[in-house]
Picture 1 (spheres, rainbow, N blue to C red):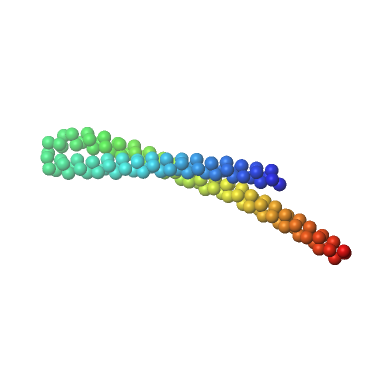
Picture 2: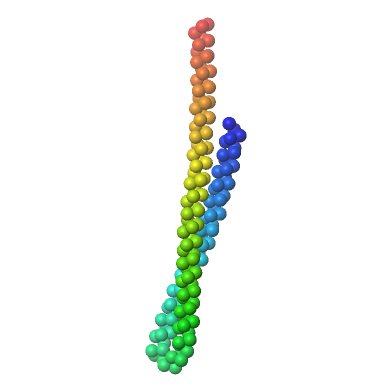
Length: 139
């Protein structure tokens, strides 16, 4: 019985470690997603600023076309990357949910094992007390 309890504790420890690794991976992916969103927003804001600048100073008009096409490609590239990151985030969230359920199954098994041990110990103790009580009656 003790061996099984020790094995369950080891498995639970490994599952929790796996959960921690997946959580770290999820946090890194989320940070990359947020950073990519910031780059897109910053580039779009820069494009807007450049358009306003051309309105006030026509000398910038010649370089605006080159800048805008480059900035739009950058936004498209990062938008595509953002979509890929979104898919990866969803997959990692699913992995996290599955890993949590897996760990929880072993925790429940351990609880059941501990409960069974306690029940068996109490039954053994009750039996001993009954035997002691029976001996005193016969004396």
